[in-house]
Picture 1 (cartoon, rainbow, N blue to C red):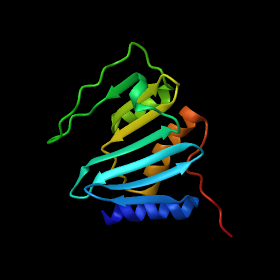
Picture 2: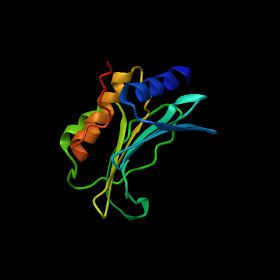
Picture 3: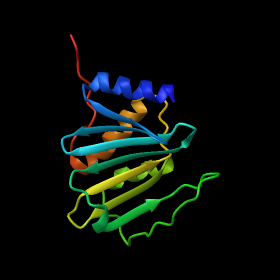
Picture 4: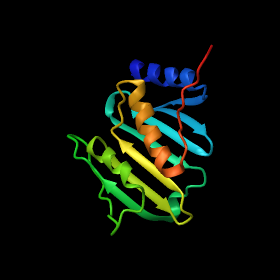
Length: 151
């Protein structure tokens, strides 16, 4: 748990983005940049019970129109079934994440996206940067984490 906390603190310093940390039964880190919210939550007692959510401002869970899901089987975890669409409604470059994580992409009726990856247990800062920037670049045409050069 200390390693993950250090990674998010380093991420905050390297990008100059503030974050909110909440501690309860799960530990949650929340970044907000340009109307895109990034939430990493995990159970400190069982790190495989962790998710990374990236969603646009205005995404509404109650009016989800399309869902794509590729859920990996995990020992000891119950998987909820995900209905599959007839066609892929998002950039196909994001599909390579399904090899490493369970991937759920939702689009509401207002065309706002939400991407959920699990289990998300980053080993280094570049795993965070590469994953988040890949999603934000292809869905919202922006680089979420850009490194700041300090003199």
